[in-house]
Amino acid sequence: GLFVADTLLGERSAALFNAQPDVLEKNRAAAEMLCGHNYGILAPVTLKMREPGVRVSALQSGSVPQSDRLACSVSGFYPPEIEVKWFHNGKEQWERVVSTDEVRNGDWTYQVLLLLDTGPQRRGDTYVCHVEHASLLHPKTQPWEPPVGTGRSELLVGVGGLVVGF
Image 1 (cartoon, helix red, strand yellow):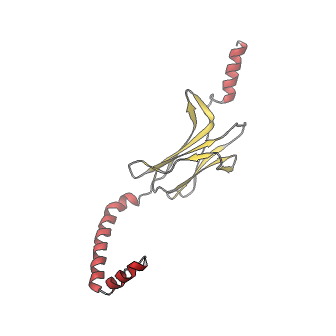
Image 2: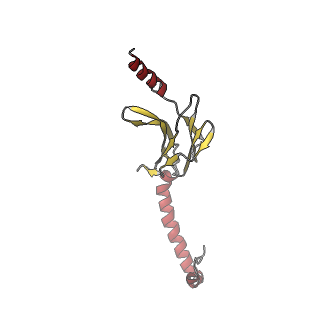
Image 3: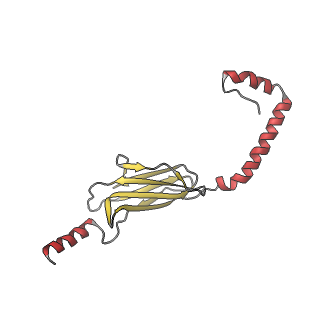
């Protein structure tokens, strides 16, 4: 390879180095030794893709789940580049979404958290977290499934029954 100047000031140095075949060979050998050695050490870790785990949950406030805010937790993936989206009834949501940056886990994997403010929900509404990553052949989707018996209607029926005296 040859030296290539990035700036006008570097053009003279690049021409000087390129005019000396022994300097070119010495630098090529040094780069090959250093980069080859580092590649051999790091390749098993850095080239190993890890599929993301995806979990969807309602945020908790005390002991009652708040079903108007959902969290999509994506973790254990490598490389760090990832695309995570929320869909409501099949339509992508972006206005009421807050996301963290990709956060290092310390084991060469990453995690990200995407929050969706759902607002008032209607019966039949669907919420899906959609994940695209280099380790996946197809996008991974995780629908939100409210826990049985913890919905607002069950809570209201219980409170209503208590007030009426059942």
